[in-house]
Length: 252
View: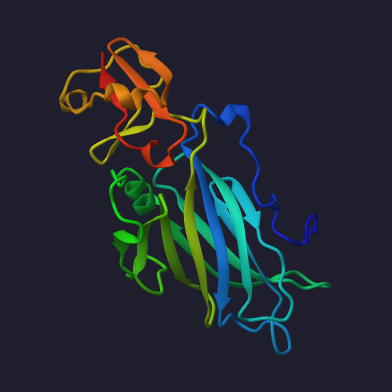
């Protein structure tokens, strides 16, 4: 498939972002494409499906699975996240050797609920706890309720998508966040809003500044400063991923 002129132009399973992206990068989103369920038949009796995952200008694809309408990929595709409310689009294709690959349906989902869950203080929450739920509706492609779970020190979202523009088919995926040291650590949370201070010379007074929390001295030992502005310093924990998007601003 790779390099085929009739296939969607895609990258591989994921690559490290270039240095030009680091200033605006929030982190990495790992999309685990688990399986397809009851996909459409596009050949005589079956299909040779693969999936293209697209977010903004990024486009990645899974391998082709031959003659299977219930394929199991269990394949990880990694996307660089710049916008916390971005939409991810999945397109299923049937691979053909001598003709254009046929579409087998599309689906999309927003990463906003997942990013919001990352902002929660979950350090003391028992593993396996469901921290948020997203319900299926006419406005999304969910085939069933999607749960966001705190599992083994990580936030994980399980999603089952119903394909559109096709007679049948569902795709099961899972989302996982990857902290990236050196990314846009200035994007931190105060309540449920994103606050960007990178490049600013001052911080405007107001309730957002009043919410800045002071980090205990014993906690600072594991944190490294990433940038400073007058009156405020930002520390990002490079070892515990659960803290990267917590409130990590404090007043001098």
